[in-house]
Length: 128
Image (cartoon, rainbow, N blue to C red; front, side, top):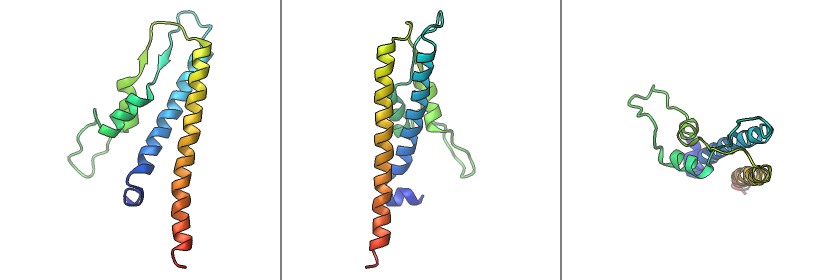
């Protein structure tokens, strides 16, 4: 892949991190929306553990032929690490997690944008 030669896999890993952050944001919003639901228990998608499984490709199926389709590591990691705690959601805790996750999502998008700005600069200014 071209991005691995240019960015050393940074863009691919960043895309997977953004997918995980997006999924985590939806789960936190689900926890907040169901705070008043009797019997609802808080659910968590631990970002660090999911990304560790993505980085190590732990739990992935072996692809022995070039035409085999690899499963999405984020989905694999999510199914391995998704957990449900035996307690109802706490609004303050969920709001902190929501803010932190959103901030980290925005930071990740800026980092990817800076990588592409550097590439654009190299293309624009390389011939001068």
